[in-house]
Amino acid sequence: MRAIQVTEVGGPEAMKLVEVDRPEPGDGEVVIDIAATGVNFIDTYQRGGLYPMDLPLTPGPECAGTIAAVGAGVSDFAVGDRVAVAASSGSYAEARVAPASQCVGLPDDLSFELAAAALLQGMTAHYLAFDTYALADGDRCLIHAGAGGTGRLLIQLAKSVGAEVFTTVGTAAKGEIAASAGADHVINYAEKNFADEVRRIAGTETPLDVVYDGVGAAVFDDSLTLIGKRGLMATFGNASGPVPPIAPLALSRAGSLFLTRPTLFDYVATREALVARATDVFDRIANGSLEVTIGATYPLEDAAQAHHDLEARKTTGKLLLVP
Ligand code: NDP
Image 1 (cartoon, rainbow, N blue to C red):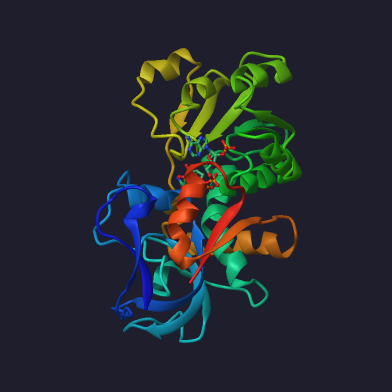
Image 2: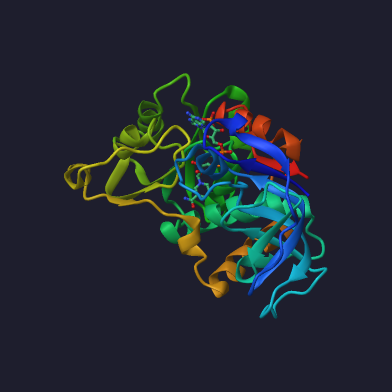
């Protein structure tokens, strides 16, 4: 079968299309024939070495498809079941092996493409909005990169509970996409200092209850200055580079702030939590309250192009690979 492989970490060109043997399921595992693969920023960290992985690596935690084989001890799933998974790696391929405990069954009316577009970023936006900080009516939050895959979903979930949403975007066209998701205040941080702009709009120095930051190094320091006393900084990604170390006293001086660096896998750590969170995301898609935008679809062999586009900030919404 065809798969993308990385034998040495590096830029997008480190990903090569190769022929490999089809995987066999071990105990507790399933093999998924992949219909659609979700491209996530985390895939670039796996490929580039920021998140160290065993080599050779087939990147990508996320895909949706049909179960083609089950290993010993698997009772929740059978051959032919439609599933999605967002775990470890191996999704840049025609088939992958995955722990059955990490798979979720798909509702009949949810396409493979939407499932692969929604699972990882949808569950991420879900835990950030409802658990990392339980947003409530009237809370003020800042969501960086609001036209991106995760950002656009997070805006919608924040609005669903009545929060006031400030968001940043890199171009005017992206601003329209973030606004269409329901953001109250859209700031183009390529043109204006976003922190000054948030303060100007809010009319106070530290208006925010929480900042959701998947951009990282480029915006972290300015974001901290916007958070009110005992508010929360949720730094959940490194799109512009990892955030450097910070002294605890900086949090004290900024108003007894809380700082967290959450990761999805700790918010779906049990089977019960995974199924509950995925089900709620799928239900919201089905009832129309959560809209997933597929920005672009690439053939598997163009995985490097997808990474180029994602890292060059050319994309909006979700990117898919189709094997
Ligand atoms: P996005 O679709 O949001 O793409 C990243 C966006 O970041 C770009 O479109 C761009 O938007 C913005 N950006 C700002 N500066 C840069 C830069 N220097 N280089 C590249 N992009 C930049 O990606 P995802 O939704 O897949 O991921 C968003 C973030 O969330 C990532 O950091 C990812 O690692 C993180 N994440 C974390 C998870 C967790 O549980 N911790 C789980 C899932 C994702 P613009 O041009 O508008 O600034």
